[in-house]
Length: 105
Image 1 (spheres, rainbow, N blue to C red):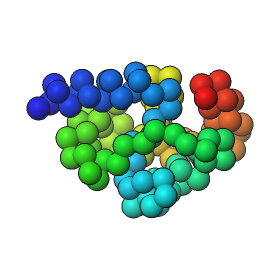
Image 2 (image 1 turned 120 degrees about the vertical axis):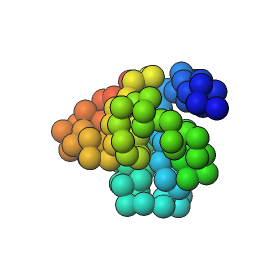
Image 3 (image 1 turned 45 degrees about the vertical axis):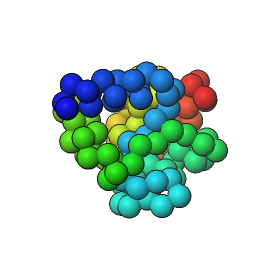
Image 4 (image 1 turned 180 degrees about the vertical axis):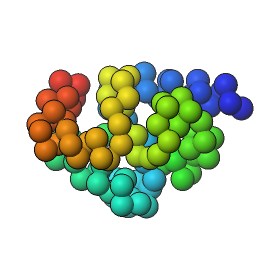
């Protein structure tokens, strides 16, 4: 199952310019960090692709190994791992997040 899950993750990342792996959904985040991440993204995007890792056990288990990042949420833009909510907050404050998202909308 591990290889299949990694292939699914790779395909999701490749096929979506912006994807957020999070706990819950944008309209109903299930953790404060995921809520923070959504808060920053919705400032620039009406819709974005997300994966609720609470409903996808295999992705929840394998993605941290694939990304080398232990926690959720995880933001990927243009097939590049950006980081979690702390990094997104910093990027929002210094204007980098806006530039990044505008380039790949």
